[in-house]
Length: 554
Image (spheres, rainbow, N blue to C red):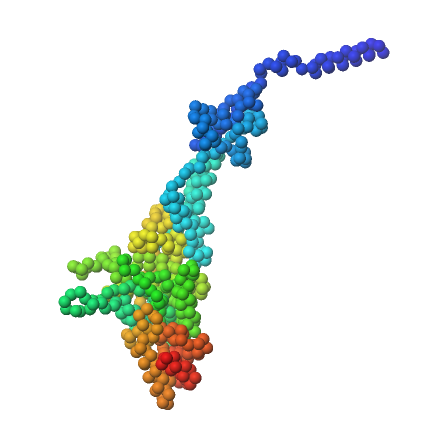
């Protein structure tokens, strides 16, 4: 037993000897220094070695200064512009602390934050305008959802550039380039639109053309008055119909079969009224029309114009009409004609970029209010104020969608009138013939449409306008004619002559400002019934005649 106890004691002593550390070995300089990775502003990474015994005495600011090689810089400058860095997700690091107190280990990454770059006021305003023009949509409504883009090209490009700067990224793959190009609109010529042909009221067209010219005294000695052109714009109200495509073919009906050409139907529109918004102020410098009151902008700046437009639509609904397009006049030499020759340039175009955006805004509002199927039936008429020549167009689907997304700069024509000419600069790149560009020719936005003439139901009588210039009220001649018809009906005559005199959309708009709501609604019902052919039995009540007579004589 004594021998066993001695052996156990020796074994315990041996274990204690092994467990006692060697002071000389622990004090030997065998601990390696730590390496810190410093990421500079340009993205490069520099390794800085710090001795193991200097971790508690070396400030992080000194390490960053040595990495930037500005240790000889003025200390006062360091105080004015201290170096900021990021460690992990912490961006507010106190660089005056030591490496050990910050808990930095071997291989820790310290990223230097670049100082804020002072930008001039002009540069900041330019950048703000550029961002606004690229991200501003006209409306959140997509007229053609199948052509809409989930993201704008500018936003997709910024996102792609941010992803390419990641450490594990080495360039851009073909799939990423293809995905980026999918955010660009592809513009191609469109051959057909939803409308095959348009029937324009020639009475309203002649009256609109005459309203674009005003007589002014001449400065010459012959005292003749000169015609001064003043371009205007107006909304077209009408109806949509279906008819045979080939109208010239003779209709053959048998009891056995129906000819094929009778089955081929197309969609047409008929213009019955032309309404000019009041308070138009055409530009005297550029000669362009004033479209600020055309569609009743709801930006809060033109509340009166918005109210006039909404009331015109309500009047059209009571008469069985709807907005089907717009007409504008131009006096510039858009057709390539010169004063010395009679030749016409084949590349001339009466529709420019500003006209495309104005018509697209009207169609977008029409589709949002009436639905995509009915609202897309929209026509643009371009009238030469000098000769009266008029052409009809429809806008391509992709053009309307680009205006809705803000790719076509609908709000930049006032700042730069050159953008309103035939070549339009888009805010985002587009694809034309497989090539990326930002220059869009207006001819690619148009669809040629056939135009025929007819007499509208609410076009009025003759060339004389029932409203004063500017649409501020009825002319004296119009009041006199209505009072004359009222006297004839009061003497036992037929009300047909009075109703025929009232078949004028602009005249009804003027009476709407004078009559009560119930009276104008009753009057519109009678006029609508009369224009649809129900002439017999349509009579104006005596009370309504008295009201009309009192307001016209007042």
